[in-house]
Length: 460
Image (cartoon, rainbow, N blue to C red; front, top):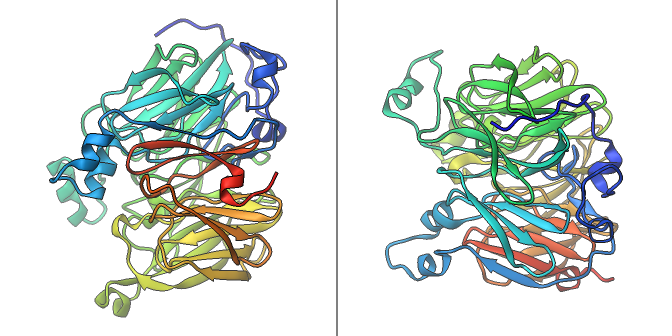
């Protein structure tokens, strides 16, 4: 562990979640960094998950291919699911200081020049990487934080699923949270855990917050990796990234076995509440990431199932609004019923100006709902699965899909305006990122893409 100078805790402002500035930060060039964010504190940049940064960053077009992706695509023994688990980009990227930081299921994180697509550095974490890189200056040093781990159960824990009340730990091999030097990729510190660290952490001031596969929520000193608090929730966190309500100081995440949603006090780690929504099943509570509406609601998606639906291998997709202070379910809206998707990952919502935008891997439909009441505003059947949080511009909703198509929908009505498909692999939980005039996204087939917005039907 490298020694670092302690600084007073700071809470990133909402302005810095949305737009970059180099004031007070060690940027290589103020002119270069001004049109990309200066830090990336959580999944999809901000509590509402709308990873859109208005700036003069130009429209650039490039594709960077993960080593081994081309050979995997030509293999006669690999199917798309195996290829994804070997070389796929599992989640959204972070774009900071003219660099795209992207994790991969092959165990590497890559730093790519945002304008040219050139590889700058790579780091091997020795296990799968499924978390969005978190990037910030702490202790006077710009760091990148990533969590390593996999979805494998040791036999001793797999059999615990059949034991009522037994704790299940998921993940084998290296499970750890890493801090890397943002400029070079050199390891600064590492914090090892018993269970996988797949979900994306969140930065609150100088605290790095996350839930993981050993049934705990953690807070580490981001500058040093020192443990600040550790709270048992006895429910392993799958892909439910840590989400903050910064004004209320509440951390929200979902867990599996039991399937519950949890709210914790950011400062102390005290468990404030837990809720098991009626009918929730399998891993759906622990797979979805929750978004904040800015007025005290955490909004997310689960799957529910009746006995009749189970017999038909079907489930219902349900959107929930939960009070972040009390855990009370304020509203629930059933989106529809369809075939139960594999791995039961729920679509992540995006909340903008009081409206929830989300797809559903169950119904293959895009939705807009009133964030305060859950009232359905519009729905648009897409005939394809989607799990990622969409990005929302002034007039459009951009939704990546499992087929590899990126659909641009009218924000007011949901009508499909444009379809783009580079045929470089499909999209699962990977949320898109817009910086200036470029859309950044990674595919299940190992392609990292920079796509001009005009190619997606967005003018300007």
